[in-house]
Image 1 (cartoon, rainbow, N blue to C red):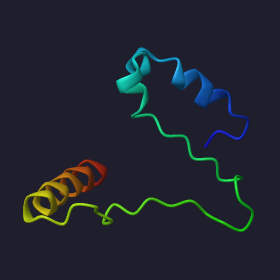
Image 2: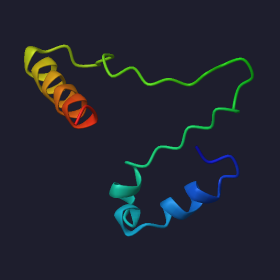
Image 3: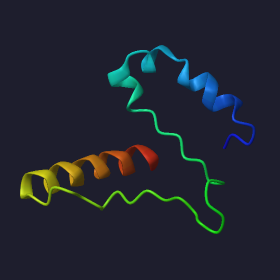
Image 4: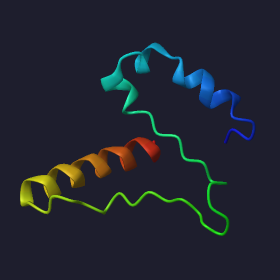
Amino acid sequence: MDPHGDMSEEIAKFSEFSTKKKAERLVYIDPTLKAGYSPSINPFELDDHSEENIALMTQELKSIITVLLQ
């Protein structure tokens, strides 16, 4: 949560985002962008429905949940 936007500007200056390729990994979601709309991220939405990609995404989600539950 960053009500004034100061933190997001500081994070964008981190060395992890210094190159264009790395900067593309940084996502800023402005919840005030559209009235009556709540932005969301659906980790189950896939463009590539191949078995290989589904297995990869399943493993990634499992890893994230494991870390969160520790």
